[in-house]
Length: 322
Ligand code: CP
Image 1: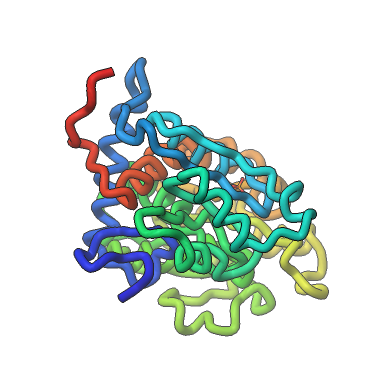
Image 2: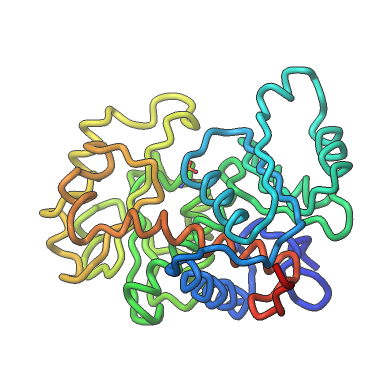
């Protein structure tokens, strides 16, 4: 039994999209859809997590993930603590001691981003029963809520996954986002998932990931319905894997003209942060095909969905009187 699934088959933690039942992934998307409806109203808050405490524990920088987790928790009426991890860790405290101390404050959920692959699972294996852990990105391993907000965005723009050709372009090697996307898109029934990158930016296990591999951008983009650009993760590169950013843009940078071979209605996505003129040009990032800011908006509803599911709270749970 996986640590993230309980004996009833429900989500207990959310650590990875790998191996998850497609029905469970579909339930995340459907629950997010109901929260997206709430977020469209003038009063955007529901009391589903009132009295619960969510701890954002970020050991790496983040703009979108940390803030949308915080907003999601606040929309659910939870109390939110944002821990300044750098200040805490410089005093020599171990991860486990930090966890125990935060649990002693009766935290109900930890949202963890860490540079080490497996860090979120480590937390999940050590929290008290009833406390949930959400992976907000661990090393090169997984970023499951990013993959689910991307799936949610694709479903909203394109409908069913079955006919879709989804192309992921760029630094696949260092991308926890790409791994989580490939698992999620395949489980949701995508017609074809492709990765497009130079050999130096493909992981050693690329043949086992469940994606068609392309080194030529034009070939990989042919007839694609969804095109996802990834950031070059310089901070994770040891040694020179690329001749230079302008050279990279010449071969793998996305532009409107390079999308000519894709489906005429293809949408363009990027998990952010974007490097303009490196992996995507500004005209495309800001143009009519781009759904990049929709991805950010959708992150709130998807994170609300996952937060309620891991605590066993259903959106149709009767609300207590305010
Ligand atoms: N997509 C993503 O994880 O962005 P942040 O690093 O800003 O959270």
